[in-house]
Length: 549
Image (cartoon, rainbow, N blue to C red; front, side, top):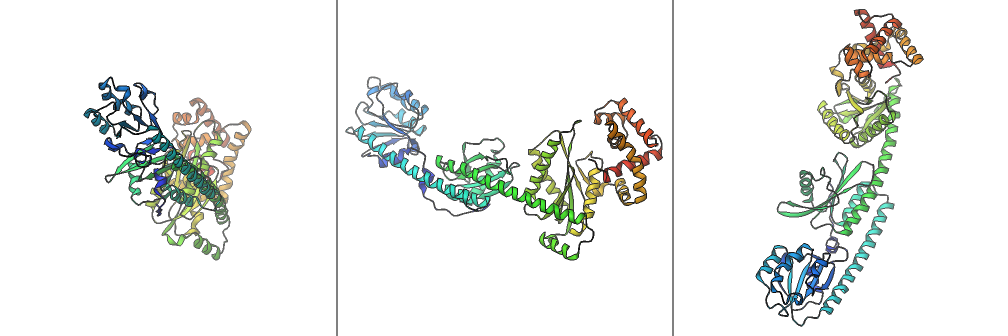
């Protein structure tokens, strides 16, 4: 978290539009010789109006935030009614009650004083010669001044917010500007509640944010309300905002020593919009950089004669020499429905690109893709680092869960340097086509597929393979069948007829018909060891070098 020092005036913290506190009224609104006899805890109550109350039912007509002036005339013939005045006033949100001393009430009842202290509702005694109109005029004159000050502050704040829009600031610098403008600490989180930007006006606020998260306020989605939090015997105020964008930033949390005012809230909301726009722009720029990384990766994968200078330059630019090793990670999106909806897979793939862009923000990497798989190559110290990285990716995916899309991971062996990208790529492609009963496949855990993979470069075997697979492929194209897919699933599910049929959403008899057709077309039977070996090698190799998913 970033910390700043800001000595902005206390006015901005105290300001609430068109109100005065009870204390401000007593000190600035032509009150002389008053006595505060109860409810001292309510001096910060906000007053929107000052009114005269001389009717018994008048309290129930109010809306809250009123500073009442009364002589007690309404209750002169019913002294017992005074006992309910405080409770009724508290229910209506009255800010304070000022009573003319010894006009119609000779003495304030003790019960009334105790209730005022209980509900923090100030009771003020005024001299009997107090003139109401003078006090009301002074109140609205002070309120008018406050309103003008508010408008000036709002105008200045709008101008500064506008400058943040057009300044060439980065998104993180916008948060620093908003924090300095509002004098509150700010943390911005992504959809998985990882911190992506922050600025503290007070280092103690770091504990406030940690306490707020501990209390699970984020997961309860209690946005738009200001919460009091007690940290180390001190009260702080916390408020959450939803970010107005579909970018990485999803939530903003603001914390301060005093309750967040209307003006501050307005600045935070506008500030969140500015941050989202800047952050979205930076994300687009990062995605452009991914395209450049893909071009470099493809150059390495498709050119075996790259010079020493090329690799030295890449190692320097991507800081690969600073780590102990390098590794490849393949992330595959697979639609589990019988009738695949390609747009859902593409949408998930784009989301995975955003995750990679976010997680690898401070890690140099290379990247490419094959069909619905994204392959990332990066420097790493140990396999434990990969485990932690996978946990983070899963947290992001959990926030964008799609029951129809299955995400699987493949991990290559660890290599010495970037010069081994081709080997890492081959490892990843092997894990990609392997039986996906498990969410994560480590290359080192495979056996049979590693034996098959080198055959893809054997010309004699490739010709032999094509004679077998082409027959099935031609039949599928001509009649719209799925013989190749059926054969793959049959071996994936250990030749269990029922499980294979269920996975293909077909009847067992339909599966039996397809397997018979495969035997007729290829000339190999699934009832012999030779036939099983040939068809297994063929189908596994097809999903390495074939044009398929």
